[in-house]
Image (tube, rainbow, N blue to C red; front, side):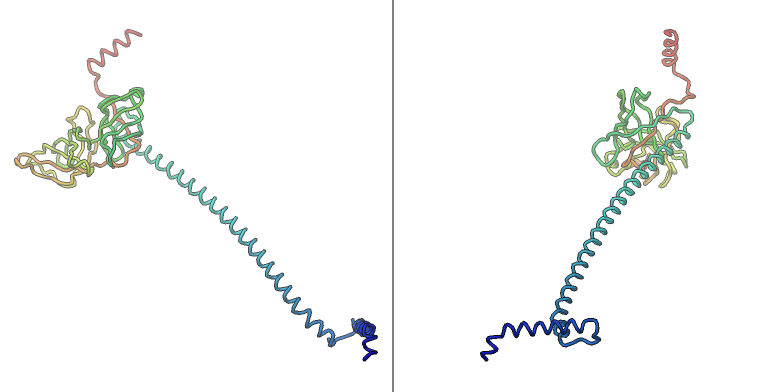
Length: 294
């Protein structure tokens, strides 16, 4: 025992040296793991497994983060492209609508080849859902004057009541001050289409002074008559919604639904003087005076 205690360090060093020699001798020649290899494997393998697992976990997280970043960037790029396409589609829709309005105005103008016509835009309106009275973007500077008539593709809108230099005020057929000589296109029965306080809030107007014997009926088209000094004949005003006999039994009136959407007005056409109409004496005098001053 005293011998071991005295030489225990040397004995330990000797054992370690022998183990090293044995390992070196067996390297490259063994085909089967030795007990020492098994011992080392038992110690090292779990550590290697843990290391490999941690490395794989970090690699997966890094790859996943990179994939998420790439997907997020792609989403942002696609979102930007969608917004661009939506904006472009909106612009094209506006161009299409404007082109349609201008085409409609041209079609209206071709219906009245004997009249001067001017395209205008609505720039303001009185409060309320319906266009009872409103303002357009042209005036005396553009040759407009009171009592000129406004239409759109659907038919009659109203007339100019006041002109400024670069604007004009308009009274629609719904306005209670409006009065238009009218007739049934089917029967020829005459009357006067007026704005009515009780009907205007529903977008309707009233045709009064219809003969009691008239055969006018629901669905008839009502147009401007030849008796008006303001409105060209034959412009569609609207359609009969209801026919009522007055209490006196001598006349009828009809509720008229305008052919124009008087809730949504934008681009309109002003119909001015009949080019074939003979000038008045006053106009002839003005022309002669202008020519003599030249």
